[in-house]
Image 1 (cartoon, rainbow, N blue to C red):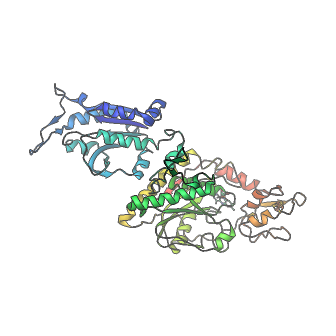
Image 2: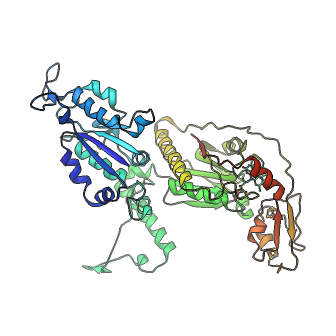
Image 3: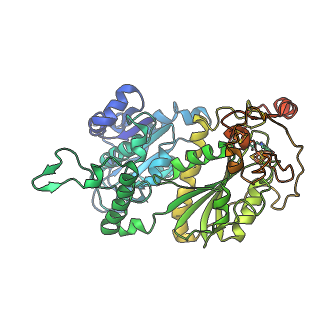
Length: 485
Ligand SMILES: Cc1cc2nc3c(=O)[nH]c(=O)nc-3n(C[C@H](O)[C@H](O)[C@H](O)COP(=O)(O)O)c2cc1C
Ligand code: SF4
Ligand code: SF4
């Protein structure tokens, strides 16, 4: 991340940013700081950059030309200019949009930011119109200049720049991301002036510790920031994923959306039979793999046990680099009828079970960046929904695709290797394997290959060589993750 700061007091910015964690990030090159003294661009022999306001009144106003020249000195060589774009230029002002966590995450995805710090009564409006892309306030109070506000923003944004914090996760596991305040922290000694550390933290049961921390976060937010609690949402990912490619993609998306993910594995028959209710104040991520350009034809439906109540929902159709065709449109149609508002959709590439070279290693680091952008856009949309209500996303495809008959893939069973453990019977998502004979009912079978994956003896195998050759010949070019908001 490159920061450029246009200021009358470069030393104010340099001294704060070069200290502590941002200082370490500067040394390691994870961030860079370039301060530009606006005074250096003054024509005035006394290097003045301010003048009296037209129309009278108290205070001085910074002139347009020195500000513009200072800006141009940065813009000319910016990454954005080399791509024919305008760089993101932030003017710090109490009149701006209030700086919040969603904005932090969004700005952290930029490669370069320009901060413009005003002084005196402000800056001539004409140059602001020319250069500024974002007006930002760090709170409802007035400072003597924009430098401290720029330092606050640089500090908050840098924490989200990969590699700035020692453990990347630590930026995610802290206050605010779920609109919840952090739980209390304790360190040695175990007892201090008669006050003991809560016993749950000493027992070493990590599940109980996680549950306690979440409970404390909620209690604390209710007491100290009830306004935030009303914005906080439980986020659940309900997924169908026989060979766990979709599951992995759903987990990656969840890590961008929440610190407290809840999972519902609809690959398991018993969970598809139970009813699951979701409230208005929750968020559902519904994830499924693409089979023949549509949802896998699972008897009773994959998502039919889910009921929303105007609940916002994100759709995920994970596919093996051929295409997702009608899957998202089909999911939207189904879930909308069940009380969900589909506010976004994403189609990540995952390894193709029949042609593992397609989508190998995905979703990877590059995909994660797209997931992050998508998650920030979703969070913004949810924030805006407080004023405008939830808006549905549009996505391509036919919501009512004709069922497709797919060629069955050759499956083999080695009776000698089989120990009769029945793991495959239990784990088949559609109960297609006979408990008695271990034979597969081809009518029911989805050809998902879960039984092949889970057999501990490798007694089940499949031969998809002809499908694999066709897919590799036609669909090897890696596709980008697409999303719809
Ligand atoms: C029967 C079947 C049909 C598939 N059809 C498609 C398809 O039309 N387009 C595509 O890109 N991938 C297709 N795939 C690949 C899957 O979407 C995905 O890569 C993986 O096999 C299933 O995900 P999972 O690991 O979550 O079970 C198909 C896979 C199977 C088993
Ligand atoms: S029998 Fe068919 S549906 Fe069941 S796990 Fe095996 S491939 Fe999947
Ligand atoms: S999982 Fe494998 S070993 Fe166990 S019953 Fe099925 S085929 Fe046999």
